[in-house]
Length: 409
Image: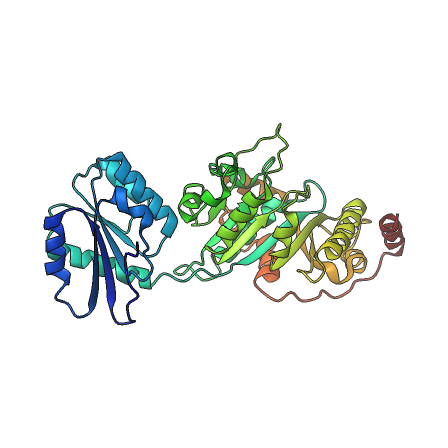
């Protein structure tokens, strides 16, 4: 059953579902005389009518229900799951207590009123939620930054966390762009621990029916850092090696990418059936390695493998983490790294173990421990600015030969 009809741009369509004849009469008297409002009323209870309602074209939906009836509340929950954030719904209830209020808030009801409802209160509520819905941006594709480890212990989670914080604060203190950090290492994920958050993603619950995962359920599974950063992480299961249905992960990623402006993925080292989909959907794809011959060899091999698998997809770039070049060091120099990786080289992040350790132990971003630190500054140049190619240094010939030999082998 269609609950509303499309209204012109300067008109408001108020759709009402009620089984209360007196309330229906009040609604008609309140809204019927206005030439700027299209009023549609459907008679019947929420439990009986809600599953067949079509809310297309409605600006505001008013539902008259008995909050004391489980079937009425269940029907309302089904409707909210189906329509998401638009159009906004106002619940008018006959009874009200703390439990009802909490349930309605969890359902993302735009507003709720308790009978008897004064006509002016209903008008004001409709005007308020209609104005709010007109300011909600349409879903857009997020800018996606993906971090993939070339070797174990390369510091992927640290870089992913700091990148997410940079993106979150890129709009200034007043207008922070919506940003979500997603830990896709379902077995050994560390993001929640690094930020001192409770991981709330329950993949077991949504695996039987991936279609159940909508914005409302996603909100339940989000954790929020004090900075405002949204985090999706599952509890660690170190003794369980599970590969979830690709449809579950794909549905999760699609939902996240349409509800946030920036998304940062912290990837596991293991390649799963859904890994290609994540990499193909990325705007920036970073491979994280370390300044060792094996680390650079693995990074080089991973760059080649990704290019072969993704074809014209995003081009992987390599970040060398914890880079430390001493004045008289005999280790690999930046020029060695650049020459080995070629165009795939993106940046070398300086080493400051003490700073990173303190930030992790406190569950805060690096800048909160030390403002203007070198790690954040280098990441900012990489993520927010156009990276400039560093000037080549003198080449350490013996090490380059060793490195090329190791990669070739």
